[in-house]
Amino acid sequence: MTALRRNATIAWAIARKDAIAEVRGKQAAVSTLTFAAVVLLLFGFALGPDPRRLADAAPGLLWLGLVFAGLLAVGRFHELETEDGALEQLTLYPVDRRSIYAGKAAIGALAMLVLGALLVPLVAILYAVDIVRALPVLSLTVVLGAIGFAAVGTFYAGVTVRMRAREVMLPLLVLPIVAPLLLAAVKATSAALTGDPLGELPAWLELLAGFDVVMLIAGAGTYGFLLEE
Amino acid sequence: MKTRILGVAALLAVIAAALFGLYGVPADLNQGDAQRIMYPHVASAWLAYLSFGVTALAGIGWLIRRDLRFDAVAVASAEIGVLFTALAIWGGMMWARPVWGVFWQWEDPRLTTTALLLALYVGYLLLRRLSDDPARRATRAAVVGLVAAVDIPIVHFSVIWWRGLHQPPTFLSPDKILHPSAPLPFVLALVGMLGAFTLAWTWLLIRRYQLARAELAREDAVRGGLVRRASAAAARPGVAARPAAAARPGLPTSDDGGTPQPKAPAEATQ
Image (cartoon, rainbow over all chains, first blue to last red; front, side):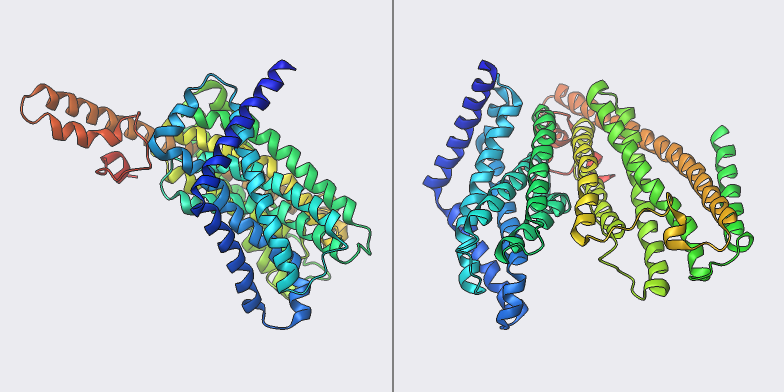
C-alpha cells in the first residue's frame, strides 16, 4: 500500500511538472487547441454544407479531431524531456518506472480532456448537434477515450522520443493501435447522441474501459524497458 | 545443406498443393473457380498470425535474455509476416471481386483486421529501420511487437461488434460460406496448402534469420573498426580531434536522434 502511494505521489509530481510547464509556456497548448478547431472546420468543408450529413458524421469527426490533436499533445510531453538532457535525468531517479509512465499518461489524459472540453461544444455548434441531453454519457465516453488514448500515446511517445523522424513515426504507430478505441468511442458517442435506440451503449463503454485497462497494463509493463536504453 | 533440402521440399510441396488445388478438386458449386483462391489465401492468413506470434515471443526472449539472436528471429518473422499479410489481403480482394462484387468489403471483420495488422507491422519494420544501435533497436522492436500482439485480438473483436454481422472463420466451419461441392477433397486441398506454406515459411524464416545474424555481425565489425581507428588516431598527435568526433555516431553510447552529426558508415550501409 505504501509502495502504491509512493508511486502515485511520483506520478502526480511528474504530471504536475508537465502541467505547470504547459501552462507557463502556453504556446504549445494554444496551438494544439487551435489545430483541433481548424481540423473540425475543415471537416465541415470536406463534407459540404448539408446539415444532415454533418450531424450524422459528427461523432466520427469529433473523435478524429481528438485523435489528431491528441497525437500532438502526447508527443509534446515527451519532447519536453529531450531538452537539456532532461530525459537522462529523469531516468536517473531511483523510482519505479511505472510511476513515470503513469505520470506521463495522466498528463496526456488531462490534455485530451481539455481538448474534449473544447471540441465537444464546438462540434455541437458547427455541426448542429444537440449535446445537452447526452452530456453525462458523452463526458464518460470522452473520459474513457482520453485514458485509453493517453495510455497508448504515452507508450509510443516513449518509443519514438529519441528516434529519427519521430514526427511521422508516432502517428504511424499509434493510429492502427487505437483503431478499436476510435471505433468504440464513435459508436458510444453516436449512441449517446441518438438516445441509444439499439441499447448498444453499455457494450461500447465496456469495450472502451477494457481497452483502457489492457493498454495501461501493457504500457506500464513495457515502458520501463524504453528508459533503460 | 539441411536448409537447402528443406527449401527444395517446401518448393515441391507448394507446387503439389497448387496443382491439387487447381486440378484435383472440383470447382465450387456457387463460386466456381474463384473459390480456389481460398487455399493460398487461408494459408497466408495463418502464416501472418503465426509470424506475428513468433515475433512477439522472440521479443519477450530478447527482453529476458538480452541475446541478439532473439532479435534476429523477431525481425525475420516480422518481415515474412508482412509479406504473407499482404498476400492474404491481395488474395482476399481477388476473391471478393467476383464473389461479392467489390474489392473491399467493410463488413468483413477479418479483412479490416488484417489491413490494420499490415499497418501495425509495416510500422514495426520502419521503426527498426530508424534505430541504429542494435540493442536499442531490439528493445524498441520487442515492446512494440508485444503491444501490437496485445492489440490484435481487441481489434478483431471490436470490428466484429462494429458490424454486428459475424461470419464464422472459414476453417472451423467450411460449409457455412464456401458450400464445397466435394467436402473431403476441399479439406485435403486446404490442409495440404497449409502444410506446404508452413514448410515454405520455415525455410524463409531460417534463411532470413541467417541474414539477420550476418547483418548484425557486419554492424559489429564496422562499429569495432571505427573504435579502433578512432583510438589509433587519438594516439597520433595533431590529428586526434577530427577522426574521434567523426567516429562518435557509431559508438553504442550515442543517440540516433537529435543534432545532425556526420553519417557513420554503420548508418550509411543500412
